[in-house]
Length: 325
Image (tube, rainbow, N blue to C red; front, side, top):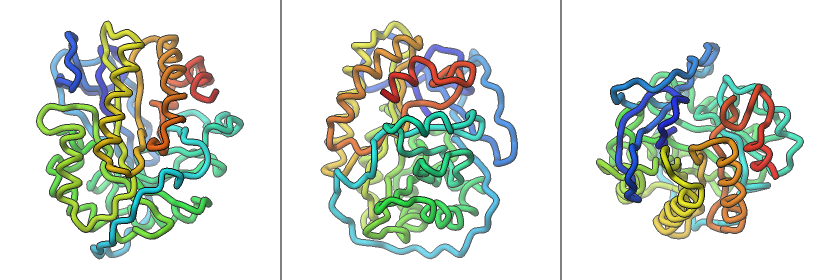
């Protein structure tokens, strides 16, 4: 997860400039998922010096069959493909019980930057992610995809690919051509009329070929790839940014992604306005109707099911109440 913040809420930071120029200090913040069966580290205040951002990772417990690269013809996008509500849960293995979310009909799916579902209730659709190509993820991808596809009961099933590979600190591929080659090897073979594949989830950074610039290069390099939807992440400015300004910046960035997608549906698996709980509530009340009324936006998930974000004392807070309304 990559975003701009001055808040001491997560783990690693590095300064970067964003597309919309504003007079503010900008930092990236990351959270790292532990190996399966281990406890996640406690969030700590930002260090004074910049540091590279680490990928969200997890280790699964199954075995990997032999991987053979294949290619598939690229289908046309279908904005009505996703089943149920657009809204989902971004969670991890430290998230408290997700059962309270089941009673809210606008929540229909979840993802956890991994290929295992952890604690997601069976009534919610799980979308697995090949977050990176490290030993924490890659050896278990094929076996876990089979489990995830078997779990998904809708007519259309979904797979995500690479978490923010455009961020140099990630355990992914900062070279778009290498990411395209990996997509052909590890993703293309799952392409089918009822299985939809996502391109890498990129940040909203703009320096050093990040963000949508990375995505452009990936799409150009991935000839012969079956890419059905385009995921993007977005985080607002950290200091002195009014809710109305962040709303405008969010809509502009997402519209840019829609334009780049050229007819393919856009997903937003991570997004957040960085501010007080009350300002986040106001932000969601402003952008949720816009997202729900945009046919190009297929799914989205607000960051995240964790205390200090959508939860307070393990209970849904005012931000969560706005999100499920």
